[in-house]
Length: 138
Image (cartoon, rainbow, N blue to C red):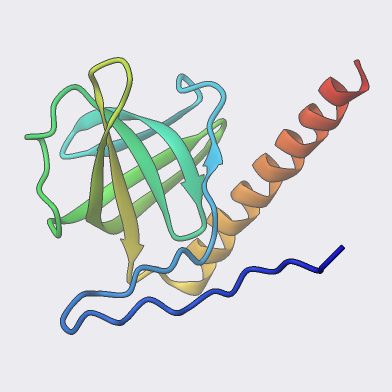
């Protein structure tokens, strides 16, 4: 039997096309009542989170625009509140329930705030992995 292998070729770079590389994966939020963000005095459910940003749920995709800068956001997860966050809208995705998901990337965070968010994400990740391990036992 001959060894079979696949050979991969690099796709040609497209000039002017931004390279998209995810640095970290978002952790899904189990209970949107415990995780929300306040933007322009309106509360939006947080659907997922990573150290660099969040995904929020929207009723329609006209609320924000791609590349829009959003100032003075307040992130609330469980009992923690992080205020004065600035973000940039980086994507919209349609959801199965006819709603929209909007990705927001945090900008200009100080070290203390970045550490606080990273700590929250790590705790959520550990809980998710623990819950997943329990489910696999059954």
